[in-house]
Length: 107
Image (cartoon, helix red, strand yellow):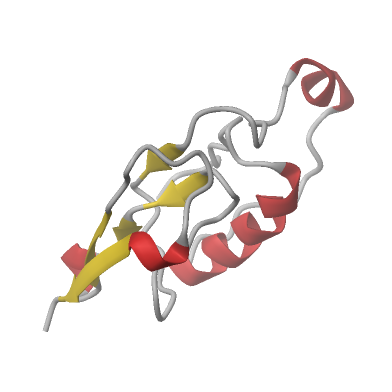
């Protein structure tokens, strides 16, 4: 088990609350230590005007895949642990849409 967590700069402040939910869902008990002020000053959140970003390796467990912000989406929904094999059908849009997620359940 990891002893530290990795927070990605592309996750907007509004989504930071989701990290706690994610850690709990994964069974990880990371400390809720605040980010040091010096780190907060040099870190810049991923802006809604930045290009859409897709990432994985988080094993989300939601009923249906959905975006985490207008231009941020996780595509890892635990297919290796009887979850969903997930994809996003993108047609060049800047703002992602929950309706463009596609998935199949692993039975």
